[in-house]
Length: 119
Image (tube, rainbow, N blue to C red; front, side, top):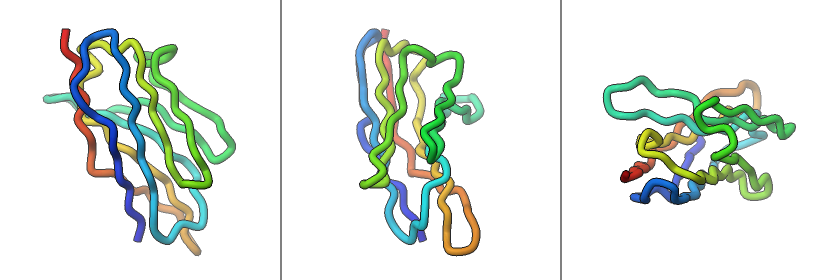
């Protein structure tokens, strides 16, 4: 079993910054992809950013230039640095990891962390 534990959410004023962390633990043979998704009230969950094991990143257009994803492979941890935050960034942010097991890979999700940006 694999667990993803997130931290770093909170309340910030528009223009401010936050850094989210997500640590993966358990039976992990490798991490194929890690990323962040978010879900605002009344909206569907949407992709924010992903990073592959090779370091290839992908960002939603709405966060390009403001958010940066990074990893600490030794700690199986992914970070999301969020700068120039806007009220529309308010959402529950979920960590996602595609974890390679002994035979198969599967997706895991964190419990979510609230990010609230006030205007």
